[in-house]
Amino acid sequence: MGRQAIQKAFDLFLEAAQLGAPSAQHNVGYFYDVGLGTKKMVAKHCFWYLRAWRNHGQTDSCTKTIAQLYAAKGNIRKRRFLVE
Image (tube, rainbow, N blue to C red; front, side, top):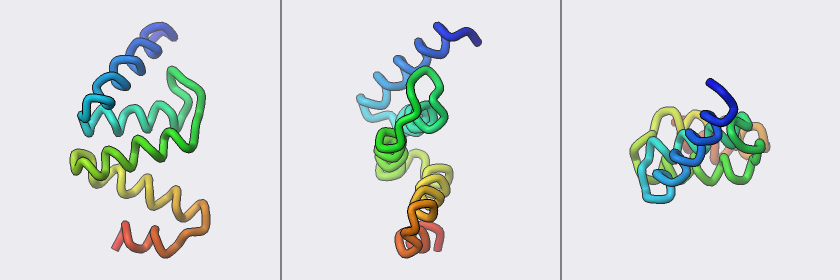
């Protein structure tokens, strides 16, 4: 997939995410997480993963990712809440 196609995919996912689609919110979080079609941005990937999780459309994958983020920041209490 070319760079322009990836950028277009990011733009489309972002538009759908802003409209409330949980799977698109998860994908936007992933794009920000790995820097695909945009810069890597921790705050934004956390925001979109949390939003997808709260919208109950991507619970398993978002829960795991959010738990890993909390663990990396040393917040074991929140991590345990998510995985238990």
